[in-house]
Length: 357
Image 1 (cartoon, rainbow, N blue to C red):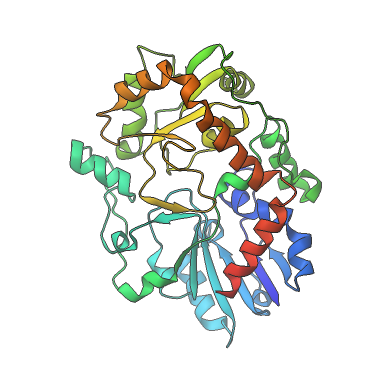
Image 2 (image 1 turned 120 degrees about the vertical axis):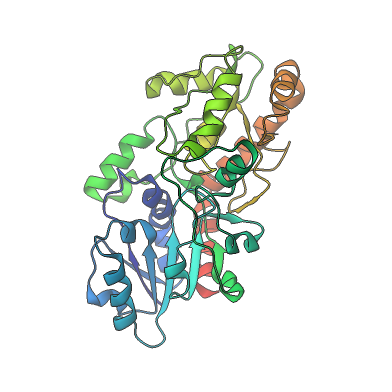
């Protein structure tokens, strides 16, 4: 089987593409051994249609000056029996690109809404949580935007979970390796950090939450601004240099990780590596793989309306020794999918299963 993958070329400036491609490159030898040949393309060429499957990175399409022309080229050049998979590599569960959904055979996304019928509704701000804050708190964006609703219910079957950004490397030198890979495209930089720290009661700080709060859209930044305000009595939340930030996580018992542009955040996985317990707005609306977010098993959930915020934070601080198993469970799960002897094989099997379905 021959698979062509069309990717955005700048891996360093686009973590979404990098997070999608990382585990493919990492497990490439095992994928090849299964009889699947993968070719990577970083520009539009007619020979991308010469194969059994074409996978298109949404971030590549997003960089096109003329998206309509790109879609028109797909329609003109698609050959019979060529399966086209559109990989929506954005880190949020919303904003289905309906023009591609109607055109391609399968629509991959790293995380989707468990209730796919929600995609048939327009969401203010393009996400379920931004829509919630618009309705609940009347938060309005200066540049109003709605997600494009899926009009044909049958198209929902095309939407499938592939894998999320969590499989990428979030160790201390992860960003440096990402830059080097972007330049040299060498697999020697594709590996996950094995330098991790166990949860323990000797950690110096109770809480860590170093976050940016300025976003172009008010509905996106609302949750972060509210959480930052609620945490003033507990901890400083302003951003600090990366290495200081990672060290602060290492000596903290809990890390609070709000949503950003998407629900998933690199901070989630940095938390797992450095042995803190993740506290995060409830992820129960999300279906993703691997599923890092199991309530009270791998993270502590917060209500989207902040009604339980103080109680949950106080409970966490006062019951760390009873909750430490949550941090242990999350770290074990993370290491299993990223650094265990089985991690490459698990992903290769996942990839092959997805392309055949």
